Amino acid sequence: MARSIVLRLGSPDDDSVPGFERAAVRCFHDAGRLRICDRRLAAIYFYGYSVEMWIKAAYFRTLFLLSGVPAKTRVDVNRRKVAVDEWNALGLPRRPSPHDIAGWAELLVAKRTSLGIAHTTLLSNEIANRATAVYRNYWREYMRYRSVAVNLSEVSAVRAEATWFRTHYPQL
Amino acid sequence: MSPPNEELVVKLAGFLFQPPLKGQPFIIRKSIGTTGLQNLIVIWDRWHGVPLQERTEIILAANDTLETTMRANLSLALGRTMDEAISLGYLPFRVEPISRSGSSADRDRILNALREEGAVETGRGLQLRFPTLEQAQDAFIQLEGKVSGPHWSIIQEVPQAE
Image (cartoon, rainbow over all chains, first blue to last red; front, top):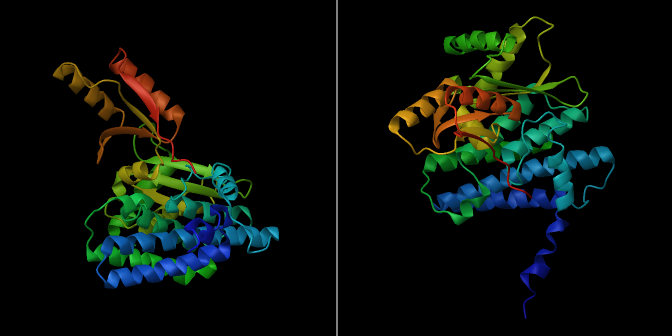
């Protein structure tokens, strides 16, 4: 008999930076295949998730590296809550919700700045603006419950942003 | 920089020097801990048609034109339209009439009062929004002065929890 999916997936609290990185790459490739099959909405859904995973992986990768914590440390719900609870101290005007990739991009930039390893001004704003473009115009995590028509140019726009995050991940 | 963008730099520099007492642009400045750096968010409908990264360049350029004492050391310099700012959660405080029933004259007075305080037409209808509770309370007082009675409420939208 097959083991249950719960056993195979492990706990939601077992997430880690390497896990996020693998998920980002997998979502990006799945999105590409869906795009070729003209499954446009599903392609956007996966491209958006890859952006989310790269941003969150970059955030915790930096945090763990500077704190001397092993890279494979679990990114549990509590760690994510601590991260977003810092929004005010980090000079952000709003508290990001769990899948708010625009807010998490701002959090990543502000956290690195506070730790003394700021991105260049150009890169920091590009991270925030590109994540905002995806989150504002194309992607929400709850789109899995909806059915809306999207055109090919929208898929291409999200793909371009996801490709940018993939290419620039080492610098994020 | 293109001439339309140069015009925006000049206009924005004026607002950074002296922010408007009422209405747009909303200029949100927040310090990042003790780094000496600031995040600056400019919420302004003049951004319509300007790509996001160009807005950043305009804000940075406007900041650079200020005298040294006024100039901020910026990390994030983000420009968002009202509609974008509302959907992204930068303007969580909303002042709105409690009831839209009543005579059409009453409704007109309410809508005019909202517009005078800076309400804008959005995808969700006419909205009067603010980044802080203090600004919303100031508008609330102004609105009560214009259309008295139990007409107004302040609503805070909160992001979805983890």
